[in-house]
Image 1 (cartoon, rainbow, N blue to C red):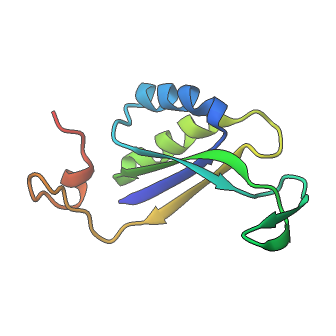
Image 2: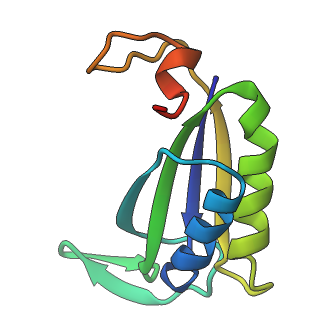
Length: 116
């Protein structure tokens, strides 16, 4: 099992969600976040400290998948989120030790499989 964490542009979220639906990836968590990556730097004051960065609005998707869904999930996000410009985002694929579905107590792959 893997946890896929993707940081994408807010204006690409609907396209990413549609691509994930087409790839039959159903369960995810979506958060609005701010961050700084490879974009041009600017000097600003953040919490009373002068720093060289500009925080940009992004959307963070977290998707727990079983091994066979890793590649289709990553490919769907890459295709839908890419503009070719700096700031398109990143995708991280992280190992997961254990997963439990709270409602049923199912574990591991059964816990990340969509409910029928």
